[in-house]
Image 1 (tube, helix red, strand yellow):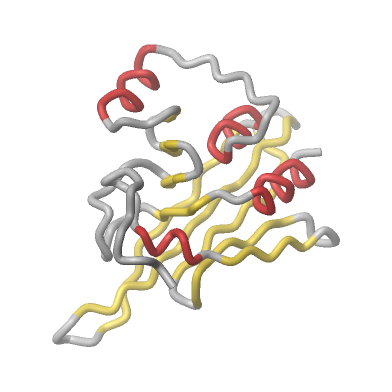
Image 2 (image 1 turned 90 degrees about the vertical axis):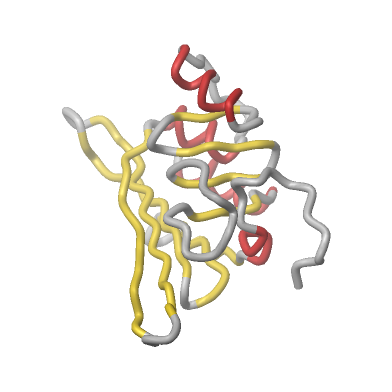
Length: 157
């Protein structure tokens, strides 16, 4: 259960602290989510002249009142190995940050960011970027754990 007090970044939705992971070595993909309403998958895919990129897709179901209609937001982006490691804070990432990345991180009080892909402060990660931190946002918030970092390492091996 999420505590009432949250000291993370304003752009992080505290529900991202309630996530669970499912790593499927045989299928070589990682599923991250906190319920049937949110999920993020990471899977290696051959793209860009036979180089491996990592497909990162997220899907967030939204239940709006009073209509009670099921709506969703989400997307799919391709990360390089370095971008994936930087996003999840996996040691070994080369965090060469150009001016745009540095500005996005600095403006939002983050450690590292890549516009349109992710923003991360410590273990608090948002894909594809910062948001208001409230429900119904278009970004997925994930508190990155050692278990998630280990799964990312295995997927990128």
